[in-house]
Amino acid sequence: MYTYIMAHIENRLFYVGVTNNIKQRTFDHKNATYETHTGRYNIKQLVWFEVHSSPMDAIRREKTIKKWKREWKINLIELMNPYWVDLAADWDFTNYITNKERFKDL
Image 1 (spheres, one colour):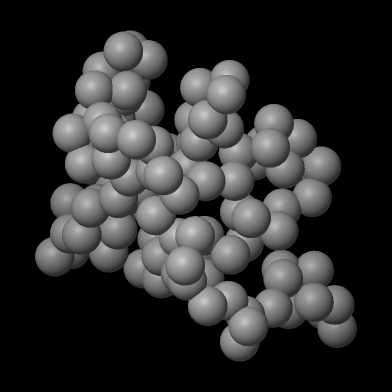
Image 2: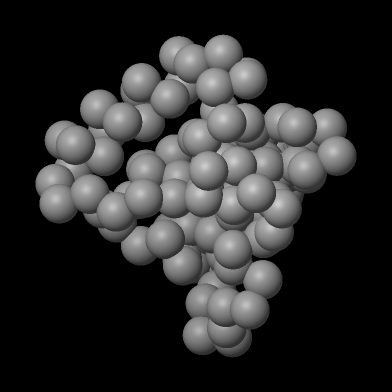
C-alpha cells in the first residue's frame, strides 16, 4: 500500500491519497478530466510517496497528512524530493487505460 502526494508545482496545490497500485493511480491522476479535483486544478505530478505494509497504516498516514498545514506538507515533500521533480516522469504508462475507458461498458 502507498500513501502519496500529487501536486501542481507552481501553485503548490496538493492531493493526498492512498492506493495499492501507485503506477495505475498516478496514470489516473495524469489523465484526470475537469470533473475531478486533480483534473480541475491540474494536479498531475507525483512528488512524494511512501510504502506501507498494511492498508490501515496507509490510510492512517493519509488522514494525518491531510490534516497538516501546507508548510508541513512542503517540508515532507522536500525531505524526499527537494527539487519537486515528478517521480513518475520516466514511468511507462503504455499498458494503462483511463477510468473512462475502463468503465465504458458499465
